[in-house]
Image 1 (cartoon, rainbow, N blue to C red):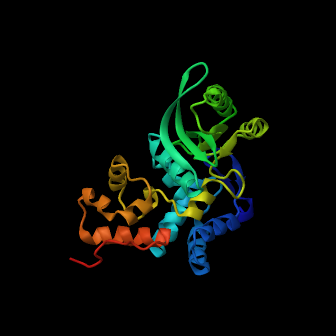
Image 2: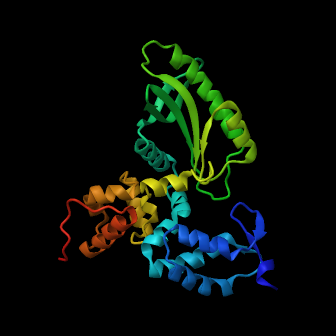
Image 3: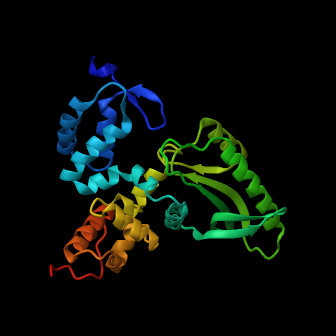
Length: 290
C-alpha cells in the first residue's frame, strides 16, 4: 500500500488521510529544529500503517522528541497534559483564570451568584473595564468528548437568569455583559453556530481559529505542570493536590517541590526545564549541587 493512501484514525473517531506534513508542522510548532524534525520523521514514517491511531503516532514522535529536546517535547504534549489535569475540573479552571489575568481581567474562581429564579455556581467571575463576565469551564478527561449544542444552550440559560438579577441590583458596580464557555476539547459546529448567534463567547483547544487555548497558553507561557517531562506521574498528582497547577508557580516559588521528597539534583532538573519552557529565570534558588 502506498503511503499516500494510508488513513489515520483521529481521537474523535474521524478517519482522514495520513499527511506527513501535519506531523512536521506540529513538531515545528512546539519549537523542534529542522534537524530534530527530520530525525523524528525518518524514525516514525516507516512505522506508519493503515488506520493507525493519531494517538499512536503522537506517542512514537513524543518518545523520540523527549530524548533529543525535552522542552519541545513538553510543548508537544500540551493537549494530553490538559487531560492529565483531571479528574476534577478545578485545575483547568485555575489555568483559565490565569489566562484571563494575563489579558487584564480581575478574576474569582468558584463563585455562587443569585439568579432571578435560582442561585448558580459559576466557575469564574471576571471583571474588566466596568464589565463582568460569567465564565463556565467544561473540562473533559477523555479526548473523544466534545461539547455539543446542549452545553451552550444550558450555559446561556443560566447566564440569562444571573444577568437579569445582577444588572437590576443597584449594589453591583459593574454591568454583567456576557457569558463565556471554555472547554479543553472542541465544540460541534452546531454549538459554535448557536454561540455566535446569541453572543456567547466560546473558547476551545482550537477555536477560535488561531486564537484557541493552545495559542493562548503558548503566547503567555502558562503551561500546566503536567507538561513537564522531568516530573513523574505521581509527582504531578501530588503537586496538583497541593494546588500547584502552573509551571510558572515552580519558577516563582521552587519550594513547592519540597513536598515531593526528591533529590536536590532532580529538583534542579525540574526547575531548569521549567525555566526553559517559560523562558523565565528563577529569582531565589541556590543553584549548586549538594
